Length: 206
Length: 360
Image 1 (cartoon, rainbow over the protein chains, first blue to last red):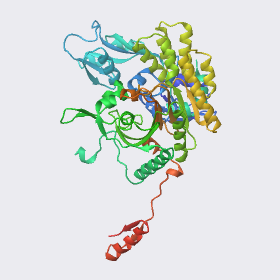
Image 2: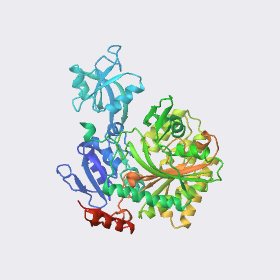
Image 3: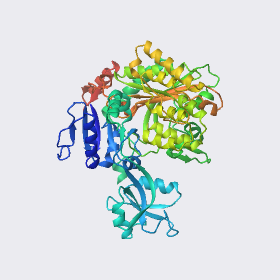
Image 4: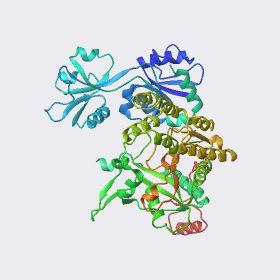
């Protein structure tokens, strides 16, 4: 039995489509149900539904053999997992954004940039690599609001279409990373369940 | 107050069953190591910082707990055993006949975020073989196998690779240091999109790129070695494949081949590895229980050129494995009274080796 962790929402929907194409079928009500564990009709696969930012944790600890995770989750967690397959959905960018016209990572004043973000690790690493002193303001949502109310000078956030930024008068200053979703696999499962893992990878390769 | 109710993050307290289990594990593993003529070494829990930095490489320096003694020396709590053991083998044991076989058991300390099964203080038990040449690789792999068998672990996989395979390929493509470390990083994660991304920016011909593309797939049974042979011709990589094949054929002859998998994309670990490297996995456990490899250049940094190979088990992780061998029942004690007669009876029982428990 191969256990795959997926976050509820858009990634789940696309993943289920992908699995169905590979002949791995689940009950029809996965999206609507409040259950968290579903077994495939083939009896060889199981999905567990978790919070997006927890996918890499389940996989790193081996509670799930594999998972489908966005780049943001992987980068933020720094999880030590194998990433053998890129998927053709869940494309996103992690970017530094600021109010229109700012256009730079850091102004001359104040000397430390205040950055609001859900991704403190990614932010810290990025600004450190540029040698810019940074104060991280951790938020859990509505990150775009922070520069508008003077809470932060910049934000680091996930950007899909860029529409939310635009509507709030923000624009991208620099893209930190971009990628589509990935299949990740626990290192021990990759060895211990090699045949099942490799079959699964081949089955869902797009 | 925090100090009275909590323990620092990344540390553990073992009591009762857990502590007994730890000791049983230790005893079983020590007896296996001693059975292969390995001698125990008990190094100090702190040593000069430079000893570890020479061994582990600069990359891990921020994980080392260090402090300054009253003479101004920089000391460090040991973050691993291998450097200390190598130093001792070269200095104190320098004139001993080779190979020098040593084992150790104890705590190591690293400042890490306690996550992904990692602690700041964790228990390692392992062996090192100095001057035993390449054949010692097979010896230590067999000791790892016997260790797991004696612990009652029937299902385990040893995932074996060699830094020389990739090393031979990288030798022939002239890339700056930072590109090579990027390459190693994407290969370590078998990160195919990342590899494609990196390759598109590297000035390599298609043949070379195809070799690098193949590496994450070169994992599985012995057939992987033949696949790899069809891709490369450089002497260093070929020698690595020959050696892995020899190891596999001996495992095959001993009926152990099912426990061995080859992974030529296995490039994780300390900078000091120079030949084979391996990790052992057990079903139901998300992390490896043992890891090790060859590190021929380490001893030379301490003054003598000696081949070296070794591995260590994580006791904290092995403790999570349930086998009858590790199932430690509560011992049955004979209860004696709390008065003078009770003490007399207790001594009598103790003389015959019985377990006693005085009641109040």
